[in-house]
Length: 352
Ligand code: SF4
Image (cartoon, rainbow, N blue to C red; front, side, top):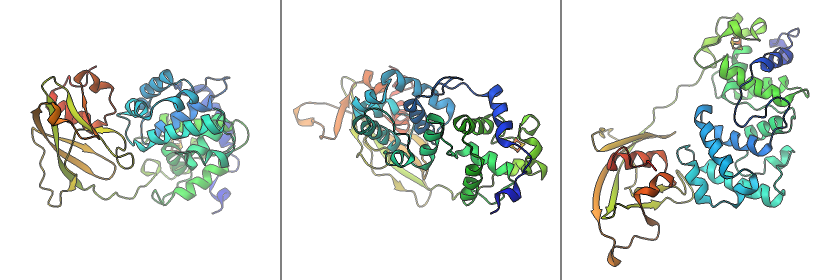
């Protein structure tokens, strides 16, 4: 691919975008204000949280984490269960486990200072090429692209890339790399993200207010709103199961810990049957069911309530634990299990 063949040599993409950014940049809790030095811990924490999750959702979690653990050392010293409980509701729980593991490595092997070279960054748990690029650029001002969904969209539209995602990823990456310069690399990466979030948005390309409009090929060809194209996803299968909400006379409910690895790893759950694929798609939602959509499947759980006693003969198995009603709100419960508890115990079940 000849990058220059598709780009407008006279248009100064870098300057135009940075000029726009200087007037329009978003103020975000994890972002250094103009003139401030970014804190790599906050940059890393926010980038991990923002994977697969919206800015609006991440804000309160970011505040909670940085209040509880103001430094990477504090996070490294926390119990994993505490971290999982604070993460509950953000989804993709492997991120929380990697977050904690990464904090430990940075605290123990790097003296609490994030390394600034990409080779070391890439060895950290949970840090892949995207996060490595984002930390390198935003925290250390190095000219590495960080291609998130916003950047996919802006680059696809600006260069009129009509191959669908994800096949077009390598081409987008090449364009994004070619746009990077040493000057204000961190601001440039954040400017591309902000443009994608504020102007060149998923719903609409607001070209009339865009600093790139005079050279944008998607706009010139009248196809901006159709890009980026995406391959149609396969429909998600439905799985079904039964959740048993067992409650003691004093109100405590029986929960069990999921295995450390795998879906919702290390989180608490209401004991369930295995979630099996509903081959006949015969499961209907009803008044005693909850539904939840994961990345790869849709789940329908029937909720069954039972009362029990907790005397010496009814001790729970080791992986199970009785949790008092007042502790439910601060327990490491994923969203699907919060839905089960609300279904069984009523809308106030998780109010602290
Ligand atoms: S001109 Fe329109 S399509 Fe092109 S980058 Fe700007 S908002 Fe997106």
